[in-house]
Amino acid sequence: MARQLTFAALATLLMAASSVVSLSSARDAIHGAVGAEESHHMHMYMHDFSTGPNPSAVVVARGTGPTLRRSVDRRFGDTLVMDDALTDGPGPASRALGRAQGFYVAASSAGGDPAVLVSMNVLLTSGPYNGSTLAVSGRNAVMAQVRELSVVGGTGRFRMARGYVLMKTASWSGNDAVLELDIFVYA
Image 1 (cartoon, one colour):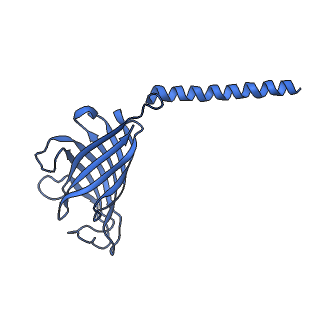
Image 2: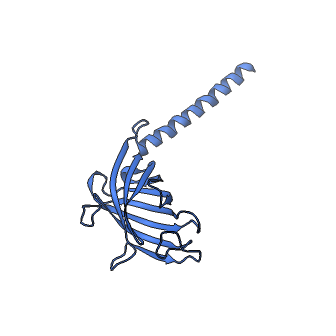
């Protein structure tokens, strides 16, 4: 009887190990071999303009809360959709690298420094990552010198990506801003 239990336990253990190996092999076939993860660093500028003849960010829902500090007319609850240019320099004529497409919501009420909830896809349209995207989400405390957002996924070269974005304000006038992005990705 003990021998039968030992054999049954061994057979169960071998089947479980075989399943783990199969799952690992399937993961490797889809995402590359274990340990093949690479780190990537990208530096770019995001041009977010909600004024002028061709705004890249538009209000789709007006909040009813108080006006945010250091804002012309942004209110708690304002929701904007963006399709911002990503370039290799802070100037408007800099070489295009892609687009930042998504939305942000004024998520802090009056009294404190303004902060927005950001959810965006970084679409890369040139260079070695052309056609790949990164999914970025997090809190942008706009008055902080450096803000950190999470890279929570991606497509193409960045499938299953993880990482972070360090964001700084390069220039700010009214509701228009140029943001400097340092993106660190592991995929």
